[in-house]
Image (cartoon, rainbow, N blue to C red; front, side, top):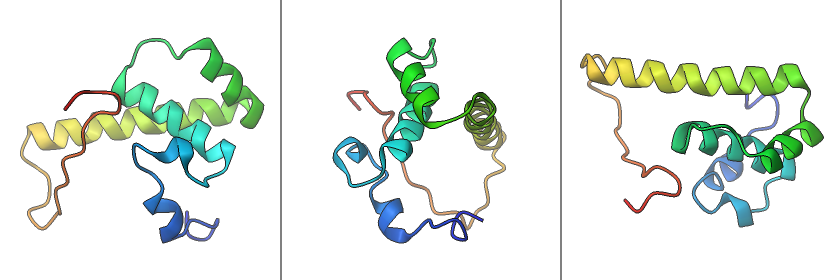
Length: 101
């Protein structure tokens, strides 16, 4: 579905710790900031980011993105903890955004 909506490999390559200076749209960068906030530092989303989110997304869209990221994060941790990740799955270790490691 993402490809049908315009996602390209060029977009995907820009989604890393340097996305802030990429050519991605401000809307995309804001969605990635929300993802970083949920994954990296799950305290309350800063007011500045809340304002940015509301500039680009409706409340239902913000809720859907937040729940989607949270559910994916939880499911991935449970599957890994139980040893249920597929054997053929490529594993990439990505440091938590903003962490020293």
